[in-house]
Image 1 (cartoon, rainbow over the protein chains, first blue to last red):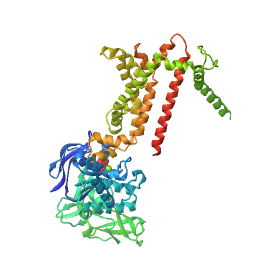
Image 2: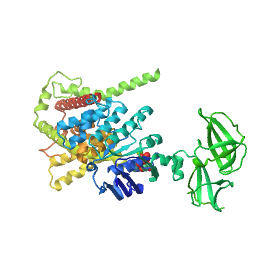
Image 3: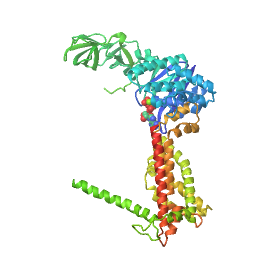
Image 4: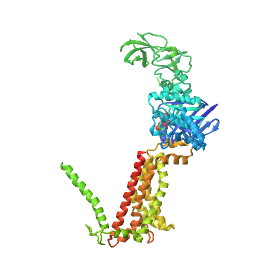
Length: 350
Length: 259
Ligand SMILES: Nc1ncnc2c1ncn2[C@@H]1O[C@H](COP(=O)(O)OP(=O)(O)O)[C@@H](O)[C@H]1O
Ligand SMILES: [Mg+2]
């Protein structure tokens, strides 16, 4: 059963409703990421779960209980802010001890638990520092320790690594994953970084415009995006609309595409790395005739922009420069690397 | 070259206009005769002695001190939540509210309000003292909102939210996070509001009775008809008090900033 459940939730800022009829189920012990470009409503979703934003319509369930109107401080969820939001006037020890003091835990236990937690995040010896005297990475560890010391069942994190440099980001995400698994916490992780998200999540929800486009394991999303938005999000760039004619899918220029799907209109898509180029013009299934427009040296690879009657395609090949602009080529969509998504663009009158 | 000489002349003139009356006042306060003359004739501290012992001044001082203290405290109680709301929430008419408190045009409006209050407060059965307290609260309010507001504008409200998520109800979260982080702003708001209400002349003019008068009103009623160097002495004392409080405030802020 899901531990966290948003059921047809509408929420936003005053009249500006961001989430409409929003649904998500998050299973116990899982780390689920909300991935999407800036402004798509990730933070709004997370803040709604935390109780910072009121639910206008719908229900929020925690462990089967209705938490829709439960005040923030009674939810007992940990929250890690993008800006860390450490208490600037308190030492590291007092920052981490804050929640325990609110719960009137006795002094010796506070000391024990804070010390243990600081050791866990690699900050023992920093107890007396003020947040201002610490680096970004250390501050984020304090923020994690401060939330985790209360042993919350749910940890909500809003782009916790976005203010760190690239190397530290990789180090910290491993750390976050380790702590989450060791402590068996259910976590919701907001990010706009695809690699970061795929590397630490059990499940990823791709968000767009206040909705979830697809929620699945990272590997499934990467290999089997269900729609064009998700496909583009995970690196598919070359789309060919195909329609079902006499039991076969055919592109506008008459090329046949093979798939087991059955919807009347689909889009075949392939990543630039997976498309193949053949010299000259060759016909055949899932092959398009074209002409090289631009050849770009990418270092490890060559990238070609190929013009065809179905539009322009990007193809990455091995680094040897084989083709020059105006060369005739054939673009091949390998069967096992080609996906088919629903074609949701409105039909234009012929 | 010419330009800078002109500038120099202007600067000197400005200083003369600013400092000149003050010098005359200081000089007069030490004069040994009752006539106001400059340069002063002789030297004595008699006017200071009189400023300290004149019963109307003593009462005026106590009245001014208590109403401006009470007024400032009340203005803090009203102004801090107002500044909090202005900083934290988006709402309709926010720019208007903000502009109202940030612009100095508020003061003439207040004076006008006072003409009304003067007849309004007695009608609802309030005393002159109550009228003064209400007036001083209103005088102090913009200073409180402005100063605490600017302190809060540097505060990251997610810090307060962090406290909420760690199990703290709204009101304690405010006192545990916002207040300690705007402390220097609170202190300077208090001192600034206090100085400005203590030195305010307008309200006492509108609201007074023979028994209850602010110090500026008491001083004014003394000089009606004749000039007396006691006024000069009292003014010098008020000026010194203001300078002292200002310096204290800056020192406190300095200490806070270095932390
Ligand atoms: N405090 C706010 N008041 C009004 N609108 C907001 C506020 N915060 C965010 N929004 C709007 O809500 C939408 C979603 O924002 P957000 O959830 O922060 O996106 P994300 O975290 O995915 O970048 C955006 O269009 C943004 O402009
Ligand atoms: Mg965000």
